[in-house]
Image (cartoon, rainbow, N blue to C red; front, side, top):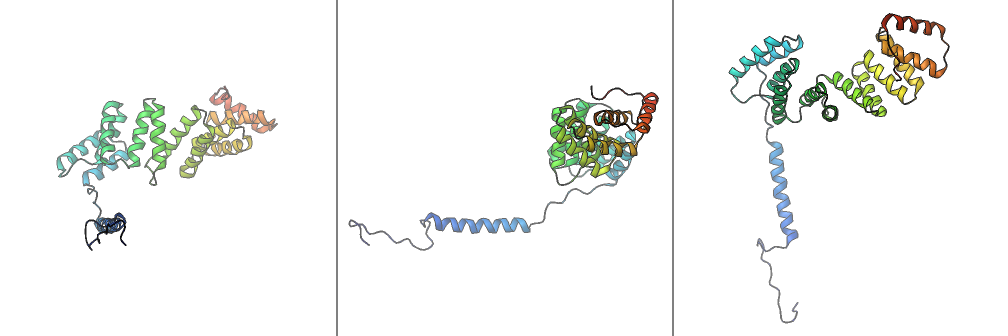
Length: 261
């Protein structure tokens, strides 16, 4: 069609002057091919675990700190590539036990740089902040740990410490949720006690009584458990003479104050 004497030129096939929508289709195909090639490529393999790091894992389980340093020294001499995340984690663990917190923090920074998605790195970083009473950063690290699909090795302590932070900040609903996760992961007197305290603060007395009964079944010498059981009896107006006598006997034997204060 002729408009005002102007005849539009025909766009030749294969020209760089093709309309944008045509070029977009070509680019999308090229990108799709590139993505397929990347997906087919083998994923980079993590460095193999050496005999020295296997030894370190065993020594850490038995708290042989001095021997851990010796094994790490051999690992350092035998490395052909770079230092691994596991190396820095083990070294940070030894510094944490010795309360050399600045050195521990340096090792954990290196571990985060090498493997920022490792839940064990963030768990240990949270423990470091917790021991330094930096509870805001500890909470942030622990919350990051529980957001990962893979659990950290010491999830029990992560749950306990995060729950205690929530209780201290009066976030009782969150505390209850975390302590219930801890009970599901590895039930103990302290995990059920945490559930009981959170329920008591939320005025869920029957649930608190059930949780504290579970805690008492696992350890009947915990004075704080007996203290909260006594408070629940008072709140509910229970007249269980046998239970009250047992509570008074435990109070005289172990000693505890009023946890409601």
